[in-house]
Image (cartoon, rainbow, N blue to C red; front, side, top):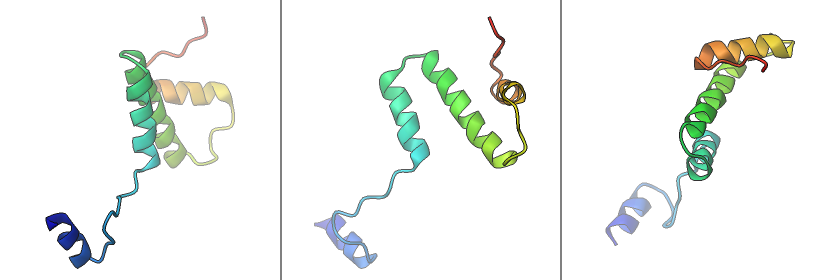
Length: 81
């Protein structure tokens, strides 16, 4: 009952759930389906892509410069083997 009272006093319906961000859902997916070090590398690449998208909207035109930027942001090496 204590939680319902607090929720109703704050203007929220009972049973209100805080929306989970897309980032949290993706990172939870990585944690659930991958093990280290793959999970850690995927997390770094995902966060780097998010940062690049924010920093360089529309400024990166070719794949090689994108791979270089992701490599720089993550500290991972993306060379062709």
